[in-house]
Image (cartoon, rainbow, N blue to C red):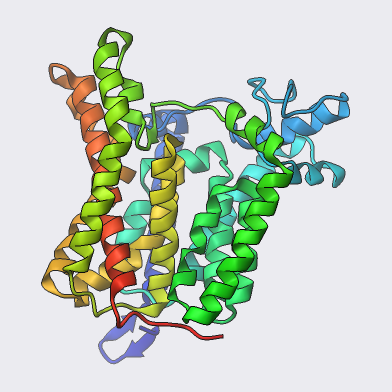
Length: 405
């Protein structure tokens, strides 16, 4: 809906409402931070705060100092405040030739956050006002604040993919180039190429072949570095999601149970995929907006792939934001079953984004830590199931919109 001035007053668009809500949230956060300190405010939201600020980008900026000392930051990175080895592809080290250093950590972190926030207006197109409200609630969540506090580059990957989604209906080739750029920077965003499934068969296969060739060549040529990246990436079961979080969270005294669950994890995921396929086959989906469907495919595919990968820090949940506009559309316009699946998935997305604050009360109960773990994991698995069913139902629908070259 466009902004209009009518005799009944001034009407604002969904995007303007989103901008106003984000501004209001920023003002409230600034006031509370001034009164109580931002560490305490974030702590109340369940966001872990570490010093110095923008700690995650300091792995990159600190790597510049290590290189100047003649070290390979992927092996030894004393320039990082926590001595963490660099866990990014070497393409990031081109920034060192441009003069990047530790003194740029704060502006780098601010730039990452700004790019993320601005990119929200690139992929959304026209927004329903209710969609703007839901997006604002998601953007104020602990998971998003976690990424902003750390200056994590997952937010930059989101921004790059959002730019690609702007290109998608205009130039699928430009979309693919953008996604490949994100892949070269952080690998997992290649899953965001899923909107290629929305193209007509000939063009989609051509672009998919190009993507596959690039991915295979890159993996072959940088295999040793990829092994370093995987081994250097910190893994935790706190503030995390993924198929392995549940069993990895169990204490050593439950080693037997932990082993059983570890063996059952991937078979359980496979059962959900098969069940999701059959549910999707029997579900009629004949409603969808091309403007939002590409974003849904990108966000859902990234979540599904990284969820199956094992464990991920919660700031990667930002990719769920891509799915929200289409979920609202399905709630408003789709058949009864799709409407309810979309509604449930949207509720669980908000729950998983807010889980570090939402489920804190469980700690007051007997076995509170275990109950909180179960609640966290249940929401993550339910989001996985809902996104998968809707993605498959959309793909299988004969009436899905297709885009030609």
